[in-house]
Image (cartoon, rainbow, N blue to C red):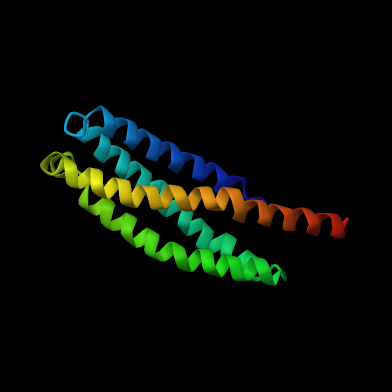
Length: 145
């Protein structure tokens, strides 16, 4: 299974988080419009990414014949539901410059909590989950050859 697409989307999302962090540090009120645009843009990538995982990755893991990958995939998919729910609430709350300006400290607190959970999750997938999938795919290819 080729997961390059998923890894590329992780990079896009992590870059988006880094950009929001940079904008926040430079001044939430001064950069509110850019922050709101960044949130909207990142939301599109996150929805696309998670939709593809749900349609392609997790079903493939369930059908892989590898019980460890199937269980791990199911666990990751389930855990992501609460992370996604928190992110979608965050995105709805902070998707306009007026809302960001209206409560800069609230935005900061939410961003620190929600974006950190996404960041941590993606790093965990990049470090532990995706390499396991790639090792399994590599073994399967060698066995088929």
